[in-house]
Amino acid sequence: MKSLRITLAIAAAIGLSACTNGDLVSRAVAPTTALLSEKAEQPQQLVSPSYNVVAVNVVAPTTLKVSEGNTYYPNADIVWREDNPGNRYEQVSGLIENAFQLGVSGIEGDRGVILNVQVVRFHALTERARFTVGGTHDIHFILTVLDAETTQVIEPARLIETSLTALGGMAGMVAASRGQTQRVRITAHLVDFIRLELARPRVIADIAPVI
Image (cartoon, rainbow, N blue to C red):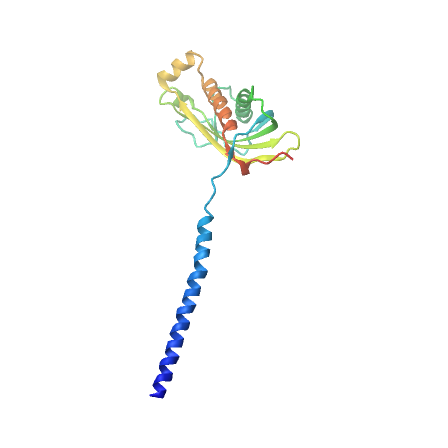
């Protein structure tokens, strides 16, 4: 009997010890769980840039593929036919630079900036598409914003894509007769797009502070 009482006492002690340890563990976990629940993600702070564009640099790399083929949808990076045959890289970069200059005119913000623009894709219509089905004007470019004084990168390079309906057939001919050529329509679209893009609120962390 004495041996049995000793065995029961030892078992009770072990059971009490296990309950105590379990209680300590549960209390240790509870504050950690509460702490994690308090670390909810804060909403990202947005800010509208206040820029004064002092220069625009546009380049169409000669590594881009140009097509002069009169198909409906050439497999190329640059398709442009409203200028006479010539250097399509210069023609396209000139069109985009002109649109940017018009787009930033009248914007007088607090911080002088330089816009570097690298053309990635510029698809207008071929002659065949222009006089039949029409299509889409598709324009992609990489935009980098620099501080005008320090040339520090304010907004890192990012790919921007935009497009608009390209008129074809009778609609295209009527538009052209009214002065709404591909050049005019693309330029007007880019002007509006650029103004909206520069005014678009950004995450504050994406804009480098003035040093």
